[in-house]
Length: 189
Image (cartoon, rainbow, N blue to C red; front, side, top):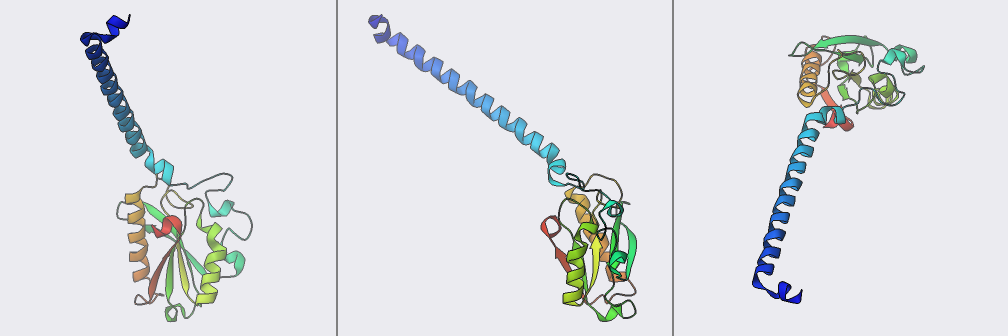
């Protein structure tokens, strides 16, 4: 047996077999990597956007009390459906600091975080409105809350943001020269 292992043919065979094995293993690892990367790319939107998560309702009207509407807090507001460039309609609430003199206050466009609807962000928006003395436009992305039921995507959220800004810049009760944008989590991306 030791004569076989010492012969030059055996060494070449061992190197050749190892090389073939490493080459095939490399191709398998690269192939699996490509498949995993492709699956991640294909499923990225469903892994990034969560209009509904856990036991949270999709629509503000289904939220627990005090998270359903600004009217539960005696706040003057307008409810709007804003049409995006691709025809999708997004929902928004415009909370007015002073209904008769809203134009005298700056306006904050509030893009909420992932998961849930704008009703769940009411306490935060109300605090901003009161402490910062601003109007607040709370925007729901496509597929979230009362907005059209379409799958959210990066491209779609960009269209949502553009539509919300166009809307607030033209709103007759709002001073177009005094608009600020606030985003949390997904809304800040």
